[in-house]
Length: 313
Image 1 (tube, rainbow, N blue to C red):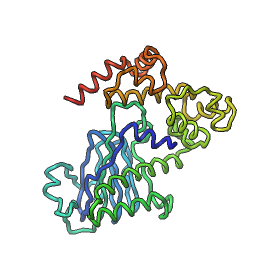
Image 2: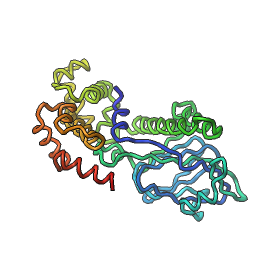
Image 3: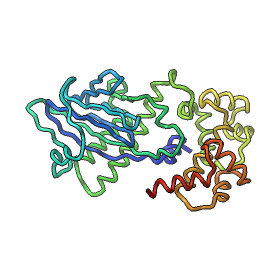
Image 4: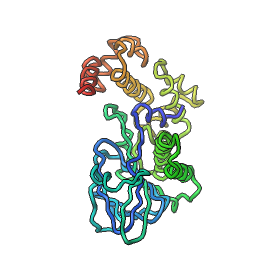
């Protein structure tokens, strides 16, 4: 099982194109994605990125950046200090062509870049995005031009240029693949500076396999001995490596994952609470309610009523 894929599935992360921009100097865009993460990829020319609290960065062709914090205001500019227009419906109506590209006219040098967004389910507590720094920057200058990320980026830009049947669906899937590649690249570069979490656990083959087993069979009454045997290490080795990398022992992580899955089922299905408790590994509805209340701050029935009510509002 792929633990990163499991968490992406539960958090309902999905990508979509905001704009494929063709801009001529001088130009500037002021962007804020209220309910998701922002993603930008440069394919020609250069683009300056400015984010509050971070030094300005010059992005070159092949560079991609992920801004995981919802509502983070940032500027994309042809040069530092250039006036920026707010990216909003009126700007799109003015500048988007019949082919769907956003064209900013001007007398200067051109640049091309993709603006995309990632939406996700805020109700799920698994802190995927909160574990990431404000700006993730991946560049072929550091990694080389022939990486899976760069290959995916080339496929994506080809789909955007062709406008063929099925291109829209292909683009959305490729953006989600790019998200995974950016996370992988960040993990590779930040091995010694990232706090313990399930994400850092993916670096270790043994811990990653254990996470995959937990994710794949959350209903199973896992013991440390069974889990250790399944990943071919001793009990003490598994507990030590898992705790060091993930920040909590396997049993505590299993409970947390079960509650994540239960929360999703409570929101997205009408199955009885007792049925859900069994699906996530609890033989007693009382024990499940107690564990859910401890992690979520309210019992399952109240959580279901509140979250379904918010969706209907």
